[in-house]
Length: 437
Image 1 (cartoon, rainbow, N blue to C red):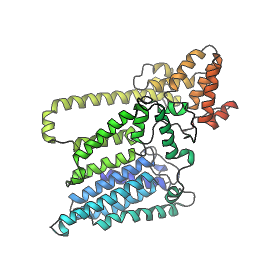
Image 2: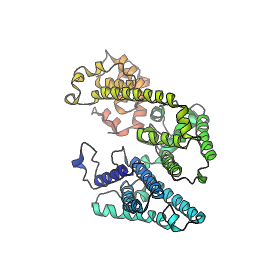
Image 3: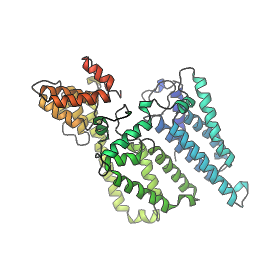
Image 4: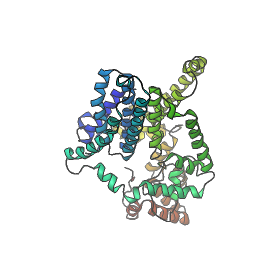
């Protein structure tokens, strides 16, 4: 486990928190003062990475001698500082569980051990529980050193998210959507369209919603309740059959911990939609799968090599296609020389990123009486891909040009409910921006 790399990520996060990462561009981003997320997308992902590093550090403690253990103490303090700098409530919950479960395992180890203190592999239970007050001390101290205006973790815990941005509102909307199609769901990738097209009776989550921020709920809203129960129940049965509470091997305990951190995060957000966490999740499942690893590798060597070669080819194609399609979203001078002119025409035929090409085509095409039918069809399709103001306004404008006034009125009502500020700008003939930007 590359704990050293996670330590570098922790240092990077602290530099970002204090606004000292500008000089590291373009190797990393420079978020606003008080924001820390390393080279990941946002702070919850950064917090999960740090939690995984804490678990790996505990594993190192179990297999190492005194010299390595002496280094792990300052490394652990660095990780606690980084976790506090993330101001992630998900990260705090992970740390509470890691500290409590590790303290229980250390207590169990001491209860069973007859080898004296020298034979103990985990730190003392009280030292592990001390991670919790250390976190809160760091969460109190870090904003004081950063100055005024920096977001405070204590305030986040006390006040929570704004009402229209809270997970409770989000989950309430998702439950309403599940109730509309409980058996088969709305379809894979249709949550954003379902959320946009539904006029809720109560509060509405005001952002574009393409994930339920809870894996079981997401499976239920897109595949239906039976499929969600089957998938989640099957995974739960596998976990119960594996009996992780009986594990004593340090490596397997670490892997269970990594898996647990990702699963916990998946109940509050969507880490499994990102490659790094998908990779760790898959490796954890492979490591914990029953049977002899050596025998399986010997028996499946050829199929495994063939699968690895096929995967590398797919990844290579995806990287090439992504690089190619992304050029349309860059300024002309920043594009690859071969794609600076007639870029959109050269991108037709993309297999993996066809919708991204169509989205660029829609946003770059002015609506007129001559092309209203084509724009209308394209906007209807893209409404299921990304129901954002730039798509919605093209759909309404093209519908009015085609004389589809009832459809235009229906979309205008949905537009006003989903994006009131952008709708007002559109009515005033002002440019409409993507609210996610």
